[in-house]
Image (cartoon, rainbow over all chains, first blue to last red; front, side, top):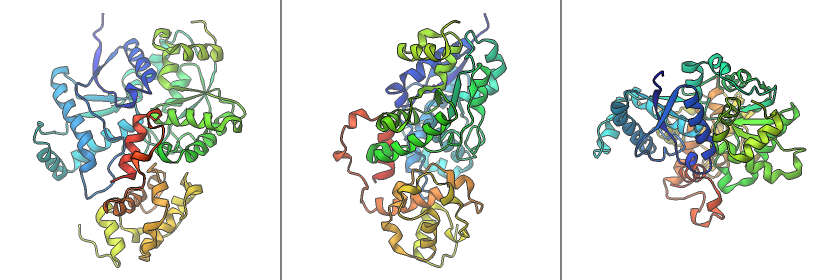
Length: 293
Length: 127
């Protein structure tokens, strides 16, 4: 049997709570495609948002500590690649890593501050799970492994902000990303073109100003529904939460509901990995797409 | 980096964000694309203009607190200004005085919220 490629995996806080179904399907899909996600030991919260103040490295401490964990673990695992699922985690880890690589003074400052840790040397590569699927596995190869084609199911891919912006860290074009659309097409779905696929869901305003999130969600979901979407696929547990909550708050403002899933759930469904899917998600997908493998 | 700034507010913003507001020529592209303008009291380009004019009232505006740093404006600015960093600097001027925008202890139904939202909100809206 071909040896499985191992890759370091950073889960992040919400993947372990609200987004468990995202992780479970992602791990199963990876395995079916020949790579294994190995959870980073002793990881901590990435901080969720990148520190935008240029006069302070304070917000870079948490993500840097994770990069140090990855550096330690890379020696054991024999790979420098660190992957994530959550868009927020991806953005912070990737952007801090890029920043430290190009700012030796900041790196030195952080290394001196974290004198309880080994120095970070900048050798870790932060890659999003979707990028691995596209560049290392190949969507054509994934298509060959499909056991249950998605029968032209109308999927609106929702990219949100942090996966594609800013341009320097984004995994695809910030204005018109297509990576998830192409993946969905390779599974036999019909990817819907709609105008708000990269417009913010309202992010952390769900904490103190829920009305903003509701209005954002209605606008995004309505645009997808108007173009026939049956399913919205996301990469971010915060986007997922906000669209779900927004849909709940909107009630009859939306003429019908849409099924909200993580893109890995559609992958798991297409690859026939039913055991990795939550029962109600599997049921809904069977209802919308058809059940035969 | 030393840059001469004609006013102290612009200088403060520059020190925190590294962004020179005088690069802005008021095309309005940031405001045209911003998904949050419905909830703002000043449009993003007006915020920049007020900093250029050293109108300190901009520090009382709602706009920087509504900005969720989605980077749409920063991606599109034809002058390569990172407007999200300018909004962050405006927030930081208040937060660094020890004035929080939200009271974490007063939040209701906190257990229903995902960690990701709570961490982000406390990093953005409290000091």
